[in-house]
Amino acid sequence: MIAAADQAGWNARKRFVAMADGRRLAYVDSGGDGMPLFLLHGYTDSSRSWSLIEPHLAGLRLVMPDLPGHGLSPAMPLPAVEAFADDIVRLADALDVARFAVAGHSMGAITAFALAARHGGRVTALASICGSLRPDLLADTALGAEIRALADPIEPESRFLREWHRCALPVDADFIRWIAREAADMPAAVWQALYAVLEATDLRRAASGIRAPVLLLAGDEDALFDAPHRAILHAAFPRATTEILAVHSHNPHWESPARVAAALLAFLTQRMHP
Image (cartoon, rainbow, N blue to C red; front, side, top):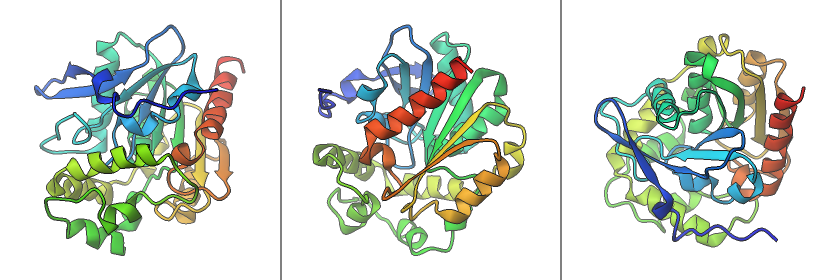
């Protein structure tokens, strides 16, 4: 039986690496000699986003950063997914990891696409979980208006955050409490600055330069990056391995960590042994 993740002890596992501009990037490194897999979390989450799936990926070396502005990593003065991608390369250099696979969720998947486009020689395989190449399709939604209206302090148990973290299937309640607390700890200005980044991002042209094998995972009840987003991804990566999970939301790695881990392992194993 796989033990539950230690949510209370998650932050104590974090280490820090200095970036060129003096910021420190927080990360969790599972260690070991297995294939390095960098796991990039979504908007307003942290490396904790991967705590439920980590036990199901035993045998891999998992490197799970807190992207800038999230968790214990301070925000960038001028955030951009391309700059996030460059931070991941600096982290890999600091860990002496020359080449690695990368899996990202939502904003983390967007960052992974930018990473593979900018640093293609470093990326052996890329998995997108509920990702998008053009997240600006959300610009005129009610969600965007709610985020622009956020003000400090943000309450972890507010209606907004309950809806923000709503899933189609049950998720570990202790995990959700911690992830909501961390999202609430992010200043409203950081929420808004990062949302503006997503509104301004369009990676359709950059995607044409990605040569790494691609896995596209999505939930069929994803209310954020839904069918139009998936259509753009399929057009950009017609040879990608694709799996749509029925009755899953925008967070399938929370809802079904074992199933998502199995899809990742099957994809990565195929890359190792074609």
